[in-house]
Amino acid sequence: ACCMTTDPYRRHSRTLDKEIEQWMQAYKKTIKFLLLGAGESGKSTIVKQMKILHIQGFSDLERQEKAAHIRTNILEAIKEIIGNMGSLKPPERLHDDNNVESLQYIQSVSLTEDFAYPQEFYDRVIQLWSDPGVQRAFNRMGEFPLIDSTKYFLDKIQVIRKDDYSPSDKDILHCRKRTSEISRIEFTVKVPKKYGGGYQSFWMFDVGGQRGERRKWIQVFEGITAILFLVASSGFDQTIREDQKTNRLQESLSLFQDVWKSRFLKESGFILFLNKQDLLQEKMEKGAQIEKFFPEYAHYQPNDSDEVRNEYEKARCFIRDIFLVETKKQTTLKEDSYYDNRRSSKNRDCFWHYTTATDTQNVKRVFEDIHTMIVMLNLDSISPV
Image (cartoon, rainbow, N blue to C red; front, side):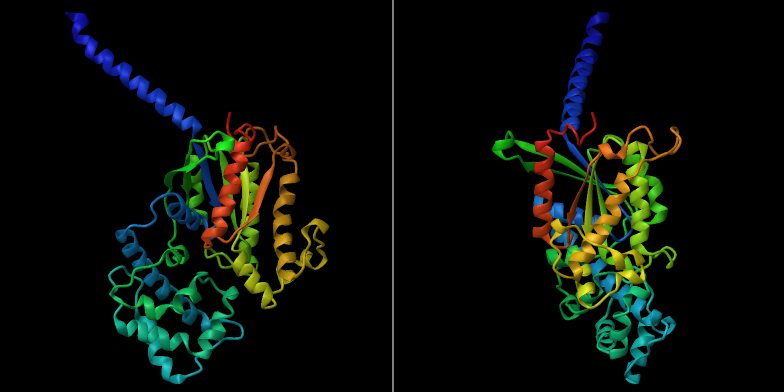
C-alpha cells in the first residue's frame, strides 16, 4: 500500500524529469544573442526589427503605446533644443520674437505621463520648429544631447497630431525609449535545406546601455552564443547624456574593450555592429571633421581592399579599425580579475557589419549573414561548449 501511494508521485517525477531534459536539450540548441553597447547605440531597435521580421510585428495595443512614446519624444526633443539654445557658444536665439510665447509654453510643459498633448501643443511646436534660430540650434546637435529621431518626428508632426494616429513600423523603429531592465524575445528562423533544414530557435536579450544599467549585464552572461555589440558610429562628435563631457564614440570604445576582455564572455562569439551608418554618412557629407575629436584620423589610411571612394567611406573604415585594433591586443591582468589573460584574443574572431538599425532590409540581410555563419560553423567556434 505504501508503494502504491508513491507511484503517482514517481510517475509525476519521471514525467517532470523528462520535460526538464527535453527543455534542456532545446535550450542547448537555442542560439542566444546578447545585445550590448552604450546608451542610444540602437540595441532596442534591433529587437524591434526581430519582431517585424520573425514575429508577427506589433499589435494595435503596442502601436498605441508607441504613439504615446513618440509624442513624448517630440516634447523631449523640442525642450532639449530650446533649453540649450542660450548655453551654446556662441548662443542661438529665436529669429522671430513672435515665437517667444510658444517657447515659454513649451518650457512650462512638464515631461509627465498625464500630459494630454492638446492641439495647441502641436501648433506651438510647429511654430518653433520653423523658426530659423531653432533650426540653427538643431544643426549644432553635436554640442548637446538630442535624440537621433528629432528631425524625423518633428517633420511628421502633422500626421502624429491626429487623434487616430497609428505609428507605422518605420515610426516605431525611430521611437526612442530608454531600456532600464533586461528583456528577452524568442523567435524561430527557417534553416535552408542545404544546411539541414528545419527551424532554428533564437533568444535575444536586450539590456540598458547607460552607465547605471551595466551592473545588471552579468546576470545574462552565462550560456550566451554570441555578443552583438552595437556602436553608434555617428556619435564621434557627441557627448553621452550621463555627464555631457565624455565623447560617445570614445565611451563605446572603452566599453568594447571591457566586454571583449571579460572572462565571463571569453567563449562567446563576437559580432560588431557599426551602426547608424545613415547618420554617419549624412554628417560626413555635410563636412563634419572627425579629426577634431580623433586627431589620428588626419593620418589614417584605409586598406586598399576597402576601395574607399569618399570621405564617408574613409570615416566608416576608420571607426571600424579603431575597434578591431583592440581585438589584437593581449590582456595581461590577474587571473582572478574580471578580465581573461589565459587566452590570447588573437585566437578569437570579431565579425563586423556596417548597419542601419532603422532599415529593415539592411538588418534582414545582416541577420541572414549571421545566421548562415553560425550554421556553417555548426556552432563549434562561436558557441559555448
